[in-house]
Image 1 (tube, helix red, strand yellow):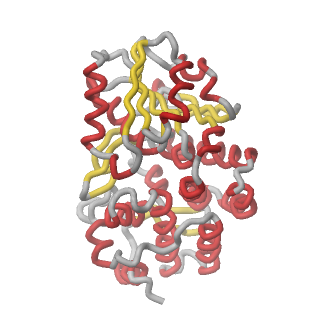
Image 2 (cartoon, helix red, strand yellow):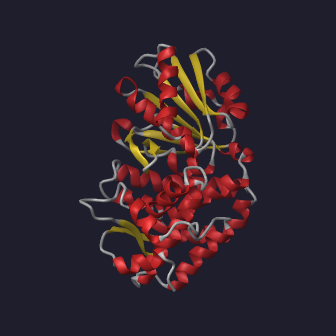
Image 3 (cartoon, helix red, strand yellow):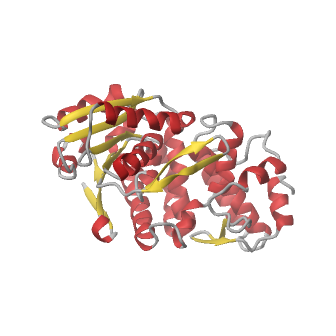
Amino acid sequence: MKTLAVNLGVRSYPIHIGEGLLRKPELITDHIRGRQVLVVTNETIAPLYLDTIRGVLNGFDLASVILPDGEQYKNIDTLNSVFTSLLEHRFNRRCTLVALGGGVVGDITGFAAACYQRGVAFLQLPTTLLAQVDSSVGGKTGVNHPLGKNMIGAFHQPGCVVIDTDTLDTLDQRQLAAGFAEVIKYGLIHDARFFTWIEQNIEQLKARDKLSLAYAIEKSCTIKAEIVAADERESGQRALLNLGHTFGHAIETGTGYGNWLHGEAVAAGMLMAADLSARHQWLPRSDVARIENLLQCAGLPTSPPAGMDEARFMELMAIDKKVLDGGLRLVLLKAIGTAVVTGDFSSALLSQTLTRAA
């Protein structure tokens, strides 16, 4: 087991990474405040791991709520079902919520914890690669709105993150590939050597080699923990974690939540960001080709859906958390391993990227 730390003063917490960790009670129970625990999971994960967690939490005043599975259910109505369960069981301010599942479960559970009685504790037990390397760490929680993804939410840090790499054994290949998008992102924004390592080991990662996956998770979490510790509420550096996300969120919203997985949309968005960077002559075309090749090797899309034209992209990207005073800001690349958040880009070149001009 490897243990990392997200250093946020009194809100600091550990990230435990290893095999079989869901069966180690002390990793979870040490971070539960009172006696009342609500496990939030979904209909896919519940048959696989809910009984294991019930066993680990034996002796607590335990309840569970099982959500429908899919990004299309990451909304206010689903969030309200968590509140209903908390109220029906008369849970108090000393209760703890446990998120057992992927990014949707984690985001909804964290947002419910941030809101219930103005804030209660929660823990993250992520079961997808994307959640393990990204959404479970950093305290971003929230739900989607038909007009924009993740526009309703709160910063609320978990008490701990327990990453059991054995859960990846039951993850389908499409979901695994979606997680690779976020892993690749960390190399692009922060660590060129890590990007090269991913290129050299993508086949082992796709084959679920345990050591390769463990290293990719540890490296990704280390990078994110450092960035979050330096900029918890995204006033500067943390925005770099959104490489490809402005384009990607537009794809998810425009195609209907759940039709493209988050990682798939981010993958296409990252290549669009790389293309725009190259059009500004910040990034060599050879690096754009490297990025495209790696995304394709990982089994990820490299272009947006045909129905997303320039007008639709611009309409949806205008509703983005990085928009300031009406001005769109994007995360772009100066090199593999170096990213910037900027509004200083050419609208004409952006138009060429959005229309896939030669």
